[in-house]
Image 1 (spheres, rainbow, N blue to C red):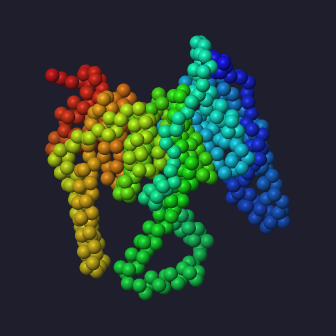
Image 2 (image 1 turned 120 degrees about the horizontal axis):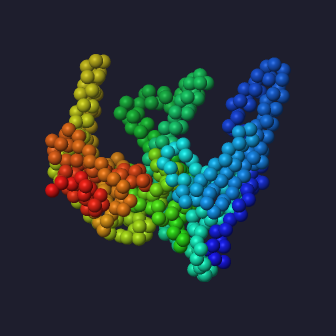
Image 3 (image 1 turned 135 degrees about the vertical axis):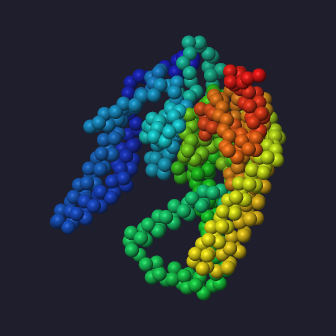
Length: 499
């Protein structure tokens, strides 16, 4: 079979799997559950209890109609989807705009052996979710991925043995990496969401938590415990809960994680325990990688790897946006995978150039300014409410914290230009080392605040169509900034430079 024969697609419209007739009704019921309950309550009050049952039947019928009214086709030029009964819509995406193919299978999909395919179009805004085909078998999804990303129409016949697909494993999850789960920040988010939900539920239901035996006993125990010890116990309990939640989230999200490279030029990521997800990234869209680590993960020698690629949405988190190339794992493994992905080691392991004493002083000045302002606010609050003396004494703890933060931020600051790759590192709470290809940079921004001008420094920002779309080199000397930009993209700044 030639490449030309393999890419000749059937132009007729196709339907989703019939098994979605079991899934769509189940998906629609939770969305309409408040309305169904309201009709059930209103109907019971008026002697028409059948209202709730009728609304349930209508909702499930609407779910069934989704299958009958949804069709799609893949032409040599476009990906097209038709949907809707009353309001008929047709979505069309040129095949040369396809950037990613994301295959997701939630629990109910896996139960009936189906997947959801999202065709990414390269836009970065949240409103654009690409074209979704909710209801393909795993075999159809795999064929569609190959059809859209791997096979390119050509008039040249190629022998079959040269077109055979090969996938090599770059990395896969090792069970020992789960120990990094408690040191991610996802557990704090989980606790915040659960606490907010329970708080709103208690307020709406007007529930008195003091009436529950275990909670009442816990409250009485804390009341009779010295304040310092009580605060310590609450903090320890919260940290234990966060660690458990983070570990559980790590297992659910990354179990079975595998990163492979396809011989046709794509990277393929698959992961997930209950909800499985598979994302394919074209290597020709890859502009670099980013090794990032929150302070807690960095403290135990861990990091994660993120792709800098056009067509992958940003601002939604690396996991949801499909940019993750390695979950929290040993930092050495992140560096090894980054080398494998970029096919070059020098930018990943090269030492970085420090930004000098003036940049370091700015780190100390900014950190200590914030600390002084917070201490003054605490003193003012103590004076207004005639608070205890320990308030301002406790505020002094912020001084060593601020100094430690300034030291770490100054130590992490650095940049380098290695074989045409721009490398920049910054951050303390979340340290990021970004490696960006020079040919992926489309422009430069040079920003100087009032205090930066007084110190002779500037912030150089490389703009790109990939990843976060802007990568900063913080507090660099002005002459060095201009030289770095000109060396990274030769000729781009020539019209603006004067002798």
